[in-house]
Length: 376
Image (tube, rainbow, N blue to C red):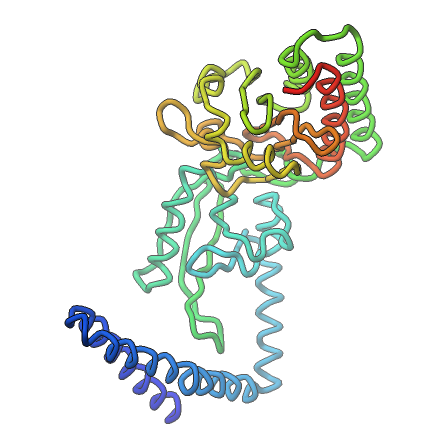
């Protein structure tokens, strides 16, 4: 305990000295080298003295943990996993440390996938900022909080998230425990609602992809297209609806030109005209695919601006409630002929790796057809 108090006093003195250095930034220019030398000395002090001291203190605390304490921790971990309520343990930035079995079923997110990722990323975009802010407040010690959020996979179902702070044994920082409960009778569950794992068997899924491949090949070979835009539109119509809610086709590589936009019948938030008016060069996802020539598969996209903004300056991915996307370059002999971007929205199942592979195969067929019509 005495060593800990001594370390705290030394750290407090260091903080005060840093404050003095910040105030010294306004000294005349000729005196700045002295201030810089002092700052370097303080950094050396942290690296050479304070940090090793901290490591010794934490090592001592770990070594002093008794067998009874370890058994107690194992018991608490078991209780946490088997709690009937959906519970997640996060840090102040909402990064998930643990997700219990009930939370896995409730959110439809596997614990292994969730660990190390921000819990806010599993929420609808409008709820993310508020959730992060409330989590940070709880971690600061401002008291427990509760708010209503929506899971990105089921945006129509309100979820009550209750946040409380706790200090895990032997850890220097406060963690945040979040308990999830359905705010109405329509509780999302692995049995009743769509989840990340399809209910159909592997054979049925494979057959559906084979049907899609056959439809694409038929559309490309049925009657020769006379223009590259016609090829892209024909391919987009095969994919639209049965494979993706939105299909956006851009022709070219260095100079991208949008040729086709197909969206859902209900376009209350985003209209096809808005995406048609976009400059593909303002869509980082499309530009990256055209330059790098590699397919991008994203589930619950983290960057809301990855597909640019609409005419109202709102992120397209947020307005369209995109839950997963595929951005596929159409490459022939190493040269990109165009880019296809596919969105799935709302409760629809996310794109799988198998579907991405099938899309990669179809992209080669489309690129070959484009290549037969000449360079863009």
